[in-house]
Image 1 (cartoon, rainbow, N blue to C red):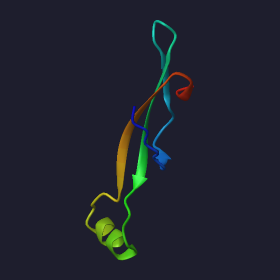
Image 2 (cartoon, rainbow, N blue to C red; image 1 turned 30 degrees about the vertical axis):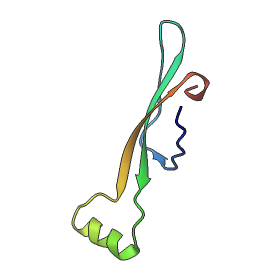
Image 3 (spheres, rainbow, N blue to C red; image 1 turned 90 degrees about the horizontal axis):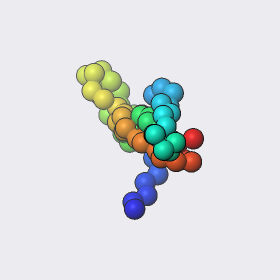
Length: 65
């Protein structure tokens, strides 16, 4: 199993669902800012280029709850 640590902002509330066997599944999206200098960030914003990446995530079991 791989382990990843992401630090960002939730884009909306977590969607929590349960399978037929009552296992919890949570789906959410994190907005993670790209590391840029102040000048590059301002230039990207002027040109309507993205300054964040949106990562779709799924959690299972207790982590989802």
